[in-house]
Length: 301
Length: 275
Image 1: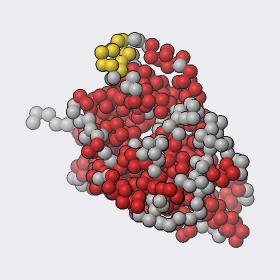
Image 2: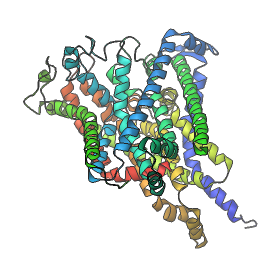
Image 3: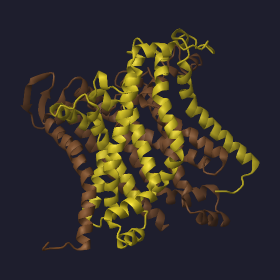
Image 4: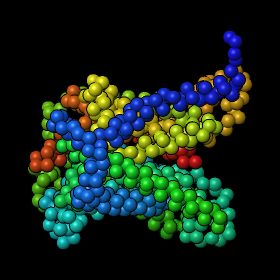
């Protein structure tokens, strides 16, 4: 042994070795497919007609951006994502505040809240499709009788399908948001909360001036988690409406899956997917910037 | 908060929680009940307020499906994905939390970004890739696919968890001759075990319930329960809610049990992951 490593060098080599397997796995099974997908998006290719394989440059992208179906789908996806995330955040926060006080009753209720999260999303979509059915659904039939739902049912009418689908997503994911926020609430330092109460700050003031600013890191985690997940929703919509009626719930993810995995139009499907990725990166970047400035303003005040 | 609430506030809080519980549990309960209901009763107009329970739906799915094999498929896929993600993600999260190099932060953000990429983007090329290396249709294909998403998630969770462990304890262990790996394995890891359980639980739930990946990457013999659920339900015209309900029993009960048993860890682990 003619050379010896310093402890610091040995430490860095050790940390690199610890990170390497995960980095290699992600590079091979995620980055490589994504890069290949970017490559596919520049070709006209279809697995059903393997003899067609031309380089078309950015034509798949210009086609997608001028395709009215894609545009409608983009609008639907944005309404769905923003609406669902906002509603889940508000409902989840209310639920977390309701369950905050530690008692046997609240602990029991928190445990039961886990149930919707564990139900397979495909099944969630189907449950609501049945419950809302205008002829035999327990909710749908009576809503129709009361004149509160269109004759095709809430999921069968182009005007109500999207809002109803959003309601279903909110039903499924509010408990997870509530659980994360509840965990964060329970970790808040009690002395600051007590001090605020002794100072005589009212309920709303305490919430907006003290609790919410301290919750910002977990609100960010929830927002980032839900934004990325809602944007690529597939299972529940596929099971409940399969994108219909018309295009009213045809999210981009369903569209891309239909083009790429059902019609095997790989080039076009990949182009739509890459556009989706750009959208989500943009949205999360916007979210980070907004929350940073909000954090600065709230913690200055 | 441990202050005592006034009686009216307490009543209001409890009734609000009970209403929320009804909203969140009733649909699941409805599906559970349909499993014992004859299909004609489920689809009657107007909906019947009651029915004579029977086990016909369970008999039908037991005849139509190889339930043991489907359950095995789900178990292998979710256990395999979870183990692989933990094996890859935990050491990586540790390295990210301890490294002082700028590359570590970049790697952490790459992992977060990977989670945000829609599955279809990777699924099409991944499908062709698996076909090339002759893994298409095997459990490996689904496990490798799930593990990419979950590894990124575990690495991120553990990165935030390990940052809450003070480095002084580990430094002391290294001075005592524990070695770098010993400090990680015997000192740091036991301190974040709630986060390990929480991320394992979330990985497992994701893999057990996912439909899209196994639907495209498995074949008839390797299919998991989540894919069979849709087959049990039938097409859009021949819908059978009863058999779906029966099938959902088999696919949901194990995961609910695991979640209820590990519930304490889930909340405790999330607290750590958040701060």
